Length: 257
Ligand SMILES: [Zn+2]
Image (cartoon, rainbow, N blue to C red; front, side):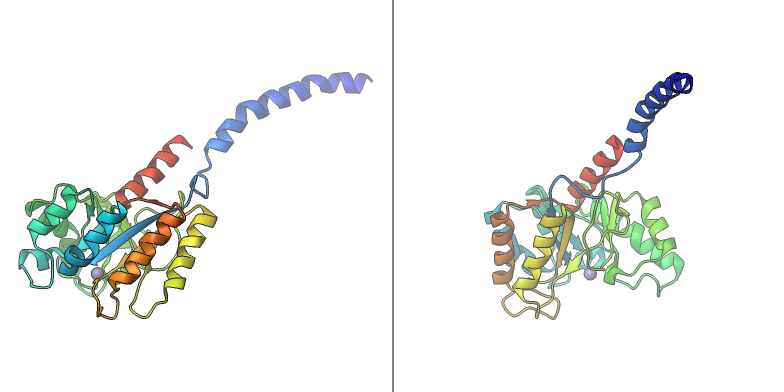
């Protein structure tokens, strides 16, 4: 009995210590999932047919997308790509415009100076062309390195996207976000299964599209497929966010945990 009585203060002390510690231990841990699954629709390279073929479908579905135009193509007013005026109009509708280098180079195959310029100047180019808020970046071909990630961070981008297919979580590296890219031959069922995974696992799916036209290029999509995806997102009540909104959700979770 004496031993037991002597233990009591230790038990109390232990309980107090545990209570004091627990919130700290719990808060040091960023959750592995979001409160619900979410999706982003990205359109890479700034194809003009985004404006004619994809934008009306997005408007109808009331969904905001993230576009990654190649700034040099816009500056040179290349025929197949969106002009600065179109990009400004798209941004004014609430869509996000991010940077995707000046000339879509393989960043690991050019000189360091060139790679750095491509990352930094593409943002500047878009801003000079009147895009108001360029905060995210997409590595061309998804090719990156530790050094390039550092340049992206130093340039002040809040997030960047690579190209391996997978889902993102609040714990993801914000400068190496994953995406699943759509190509011409992919079955709609496969795209829907990505969405199902994001909903089930409460993670963030970024889907990347390129050109949108009836006869798409190899990595393009038909307007019909895009429409099916939009319908499916609505049917499954998936929250659709721009990349910068998704990043902001991650930031908020990290700040409060
Ligand atoms: Zn690209």
